[in-house]
Image (tube, rainbow, N blue to C red):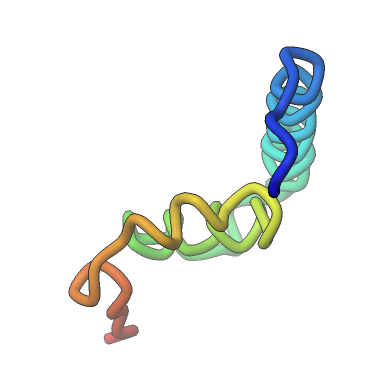
Length: 72
């Protein structure tokens, strides 16, 4: 039986996600030499950044069409 997350667990998860987003945002550096990411590319980066622990619930809710992604 899985343990029920406490309010502290939820707060820790939210803090961890906020830290990941802040870290990624601070790494933008010189954007002039980079191409802009498309919406699906940004979503993919976010999902990968969340990792298995935090992104699993989201991955499980996506259907087959939402999981398909083609770089053109």
